[in-house]
Image (cartoon, rainbow, N blue to C red):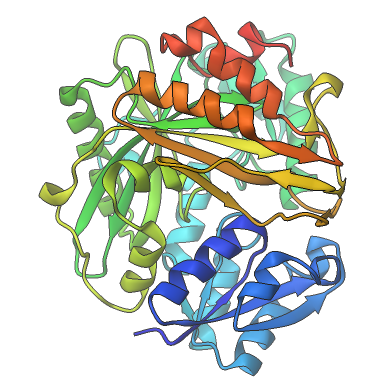
Length: 447
């Protein structure tokens, strides 16, 4: 069993991992940048080591510093959380070379599934439905235009490496393709230091449905149901829920079986997510695989009762899955709202600064994952997420009512937040009726 885990991350996910380790009797090591010296995760871990200057490239993305901290602390495993190095195959490979357990899939799998073109090839070979798209990666706008013409407009241009909504543009006509391609490519080069692009048919009015999977090294693979992540802005998720209001039991089984099939095709081990686009007529397509724990994992934990972080650690320790597919039962309905330090009325401008007062709600079926506290200073260098507010109730209607009540109790002063904006979404008649798709924010809300 793993004895000591270094958490190569910060914020609420670092705190979440520390708590899971503590419950399992595992020691923890926090790493932090100079800007995070007073961060909550540094105070909760058994040890804390500074790994560099405030910019992420000098600290949380500094592989050598993180490996050195692991060796110096005597930790035998690294949990990467999400973001930063969590889907970096080179980092996972470095861990393997240093005989450090990487709590996630192997380096080869991360690299293959992180490359959209390679992931498509893997899924097509496994007969998993994929969106019509380029068979190979594209580096040139002229070559891309030729591919787009064969696929048929509209098309979406994506960074072959990376994610998080960066390096993506939709071209609806041949005339606007070149401009969209160059913009997406430039963004990809800035975000991922790689301008290799991928082109696929743009599915109109889809829902974003993802399935959580768990897989051990003995060939056991299960899914834990779906999450509906259709409420998003600029490809960034804002609200997630489980189960999806539009999935019948038959469709859930079909998509779940396909997710398991996809994970097996990738020779996947640990926790991961198979993401699909679901059309109004029930057709669905593989979009990508996230080879890490997701921000929205708490909604799955609420409806299944399964602790995903603990399962990740058990799997990485060489243990078989604690559950079979028959053990997985979805109970009730869960919703998560991401609370960010940003100003929706000013194009969602980030709002770093000092939190002068903070209060989060509690009570039955209310969960808060956060790392902020009174007097905490939000650095300007990282993601703007302050907290995740999660509710769980017997029905979706009750969960919506609980979320509205909980959002109404949140107090955060000193910085701008999106709490009121989330409240508006939850109260929107179309959201309450389940009448949403990935264009809900752009079509029904300001921003």
